[in-house]
Image (cartoon, rainbow, N blue to C red):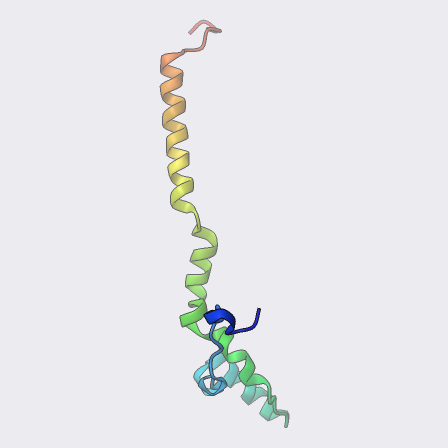
Length: 101
């Protein structure tokens, strides 16, 4: 159960905290500037930098696309297959209840 017991490595690597810098994230720089104008300072602001890292979470547009288009190819394929299958079935076995058509 320990991190390195039996030759197993942990399933994750904890990154060094010094790689995260507030100056790399424009949103947090703005927050830091707003706090400074009020005479305040957030010593924990650096802990939020990882949330804005596009390498880990992508940009806002890529997150939006992955949320709304996840499974789109499979869903669209199932839709086409259903329409084609229904059309073929209707041609092979036409409706018997006429209505004068």
